Length: 238
Figure 1 (cartoon, rainbow, N blue to C red):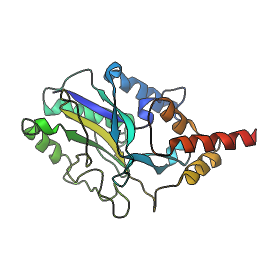
Figure 2 (cartoon, rainbow, N blue to C red; figure 1 turned 120 degrees about the horizontal axis):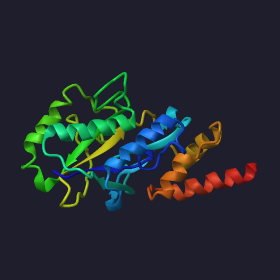
Figure 3 (cartoon, one colour; figure 1 turned 90 degrees about the horizontal axis):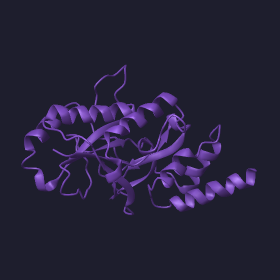
């Protein structure tokens, strides 16, 4: 079975030099060795800046959002190694969970926490063949609640069974894909002004997340406006 992962933020580019936490940057760079980066493909998904992240100096990071109609661009990257059973699929998911900081030394081998979850989507053309695997995945989520993976009247971006809850156009050669969903944990999604204000108020100034996302090809609605406003404020202060 051929798996892949959808990357929408710092897991794509963070390393020990640009990470706020050096150990996390090292871990993420090492984890990317599992990926076939040369064969990554752009994929359209409903993403936006929508989570106020304490680990990113209280600036906004990316979330999936089912109310976002202007699909953004992220990357689908295959794993180098194929999986031959559920145990190997779960191992891939737990390694991703560790790289994301969901599974930690204090909370080993977990696929979800209070703020994030490793969710999966199966290729629609292969769901019947993968039904046993799918049911075993669902069994891992018996105590999981998806109620925080939305704002207001949105549809949650992950199901109660730990599956991604938005359309994904998977290539024929990919059987399943993981993605990390994080909770918005806000009353409303932030405006461009709020996103830039948070960056401007960070100390020391932290615009790395937005800039590196853009430099690595991740695209969301209004990101040009966000970057232009960041640059204009930076120029005024120098």
